[in-house]
Image (cartoon, rainbow, N blue to C red; front, side, top):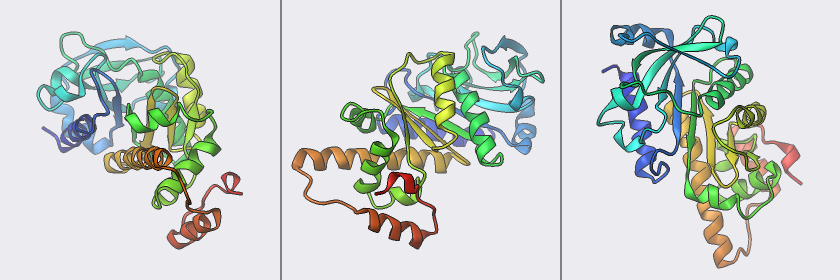
Length: 266
């Protein structure tokens, strides 16, 4: 099995072990590098075509590893061919072809439109460096969304002030989208608008979308956000006496050479 498939499976299983993927919750897509496509070409024994409800022409010809609809992350290491697959986006962006995996007529995740639109958005703002889009259901960041209005400034400040590394890991902040029905084009479009500005977007009362150049970077981003949310909720329950100040956040950003979102500071 190619290394990229092994790395994909590891990320899925790591999320499951942390409790982020109850039942068939969560999904992951990875935009493959040309050499990875070539390394997996001997696996491409399928030719099943499906249409897309969105215009994915910006990703024409790209290959993606994707989790399957209704599949359980806990089963990824056991039966990869049944729970994940490799697809190629059509040259006109109107559909895709399943080349490997997703056996027994399985389909890619129902959140595929959100993933592809997020890939388009993040590729545009990272000069094509972004390759991973990850959706998970971590309990603490989801719980935190019940305690605030869906305001990116409020959320980002809470996270920055809850764990010192947060301002370095996501100096742009974290976006948040108010509750919408998942799996459709509407939530996909709204998420893709926010993810142009923020590397991660919380879906209120639901979970989070994270993006990055590598599996490690993307998983680390979501893990950091989830840990900060856990710290905040514990501190709030015990009674917050003091926290990291705005001037300290600026000093931190300067020390690590990142540009913090000044619109979110006083």
